[in-house]
Length: 387
Image (cartoon, rainbow, N blue to C red; front, side, top):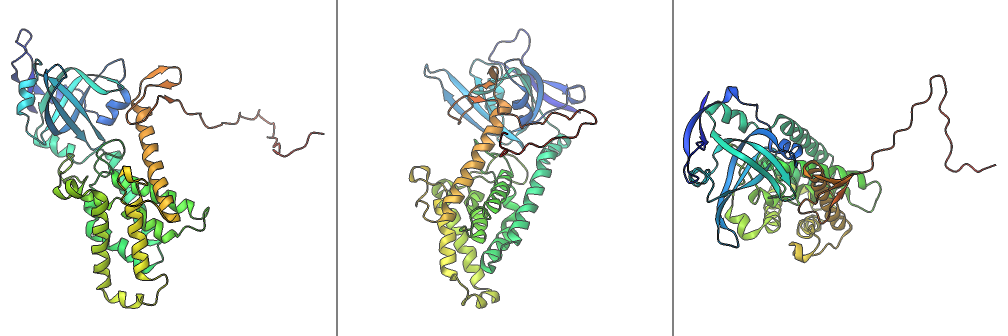
């Protein structure tokens, strides 16, 4: 396969770029962006990445030196690259069309500010390579399929017919868009389908907590988890044929909390027009109070006014949802940070934004020593008294 490849001639001026040809079959197999983040550190690794251009912005340093900031993404995540005005790549970067899928080859390093390429070159892919790229990482796709099936299972377990019907209507009408939406623009689950991963894990946590805290309304909190970020379908969604987030005028002007409230109200009113709704008039709690409590979960899930919630949590389910959401986001950030951060001292890892401090290697789970052959294990009760 022959593709266009951008590279600098050995004695060429920094301001010019030439186009050559490149045999992809002779190159190393591409790896994912997440794999580069996991493997790169102070010691560079030589690798190729297939990635889609998300955005290109012209910026300048404090001293006035211009540079381009290019944001790239694949199905596993994204990163940004800076192309300086005196770089041989600058001219090609200026003309790179939005959503272009390219092959990036470099010696990759990583520090607390992110991934850095040395000796960067890039190539345009042919149709076959683009089609393969758009299918996404097989492991991520398989995980998201499992997570979506688990969301369906937990929604099916909701006993309240109104909340059950609302969840079913959402998944049937907007399930495909839901599966293409990220949980955030950056920091956690910031990839196509990341919202499905986030919601599935939160629903697991909520279901596990309900037996521990019986005052929680299981049906309500499960529905609240499903809908808490549903407005992000217009704020962090992706197209079917790419990994660049769509910028929606509704997402920009309203944000996901008002959009989520509006969506739930729309679906709720649609349900009230069905034949089944005629049997809900005598249900307790009332249909109107059930709707109001669900909307409160969406409105309060950020937990604080300064974080975007128009109202603070005022019910057990609202407090639980806020902390479950925050916990899952933070633990996802930790996973990413451990996989990307450099070990700056034994067991100490460099800080990764947005976490506030350096990390320390987690304590491994206890592994009991193997019993000597032929010797039965002896159990010592924790409460055993000394004789």
